[in-house]
Image (cartoon, rainbow, N blue to C red):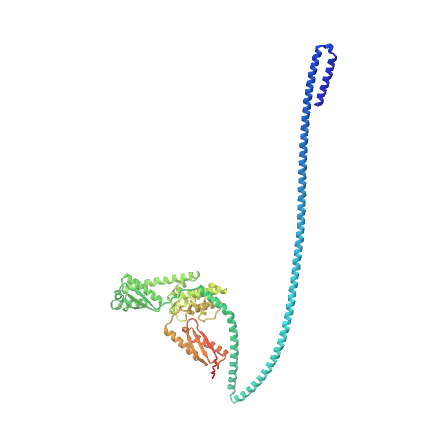
Length: 553
């Protein structure tokens, strides 16, 4: 564009010169042309000025663009530089991490080497300790060898002394043989056997005592702990039963109606219930007496219903007693079922429910048999759990161990054998049958649970207050125990104490050795077991002491 403007300006200049040269020719036209040329020149100058300004603006724009591009290039260069720096930093970090990893691996390898070295040092120390220990053992064994050599020397001396004693004994024996030479062959044989038997008994007693002492030390602590734990976990109330029941009367006038005309009502009542009705001067009460608690309970309920009803005559008595008896049978069966459920047994033959419930109306030395069997079941189960045995089997054996007492008054034989037959008939397991028979030694124990049942039975029966006896029976038992003990040779005195639960025996210390006193204790206990009937157990304590008294004058 700039070149076009210059060309135009050049053309204009040439034209102006041509017009000037022809000034004379053209006159005014020339002047006009001159003016026109001047105008053209002015326009050209204006155009040039405009073109110059335009060129300057273009140059400014180009400068600005160049500066912007330069700035852009600079920024790009800076960005590129930053990117390069970031890449370099990343590379540096990467290299640093690799270096750190390598250093970490080297450290771990060094640590592993240190652990290996420490382990080897520990092994060396252990080997050194073992070597030192072996050296100590060798020293001890050497000392032991020297001690044994000394003991061998002493033993040799003892053997020589014993040989000398044996020679003396042989000489005495020859003299004894010469003494008994006048005896018959059979008498001499019996004398010799008697002496050998006495010596064997003493040796056996020593051995038995050592074995029993050792066994007691090992088992006594654990057994006591298990028993105490079981007893502490179970603390039932003691319930005792008596042979009489009392019925309160709303009025003392009812006594005559109960007796009836010429005593026919009271006779009918006693005949129907099997109890004794005692009507005495005591106001407003009637006493029912019977050793059978079930009959006594039936009689009590029947009499209470007759009194409440007001109709008392033989026909009504028979009707009421019969109905109460049926209700009691159902009550007894339900009581047995509730007892089994309480102890956690759901597979008991329903026929046994009646016999179990009937135990609630049986007593043993005034102790309620059902409560006793439940207590035995709980104790046996707890001890079985403590010992890791079958808790359920022990509990079941405890429940069934006295089941025979439900019908022992109706069937001949001991209640344990009756109970075993009853349990076998209704499908009870063998461990239960063995527990029933073993608790009265009718059969050896084949299961450890049976032994626990017997122990729980003894605990329940023997604890204070559980059972009561008549005063005369206590006196008779004490006298019998003391008579048995006093019948033994070398027994000076005997004392039955704690209501017959323990007997203390004082023996002659000059005539009996410790081993002989031990054998005597065994014999006394065995004879008491065979000849005396007693609940629980009786402890036999033999006392052998020597007293030496001297008076200073």
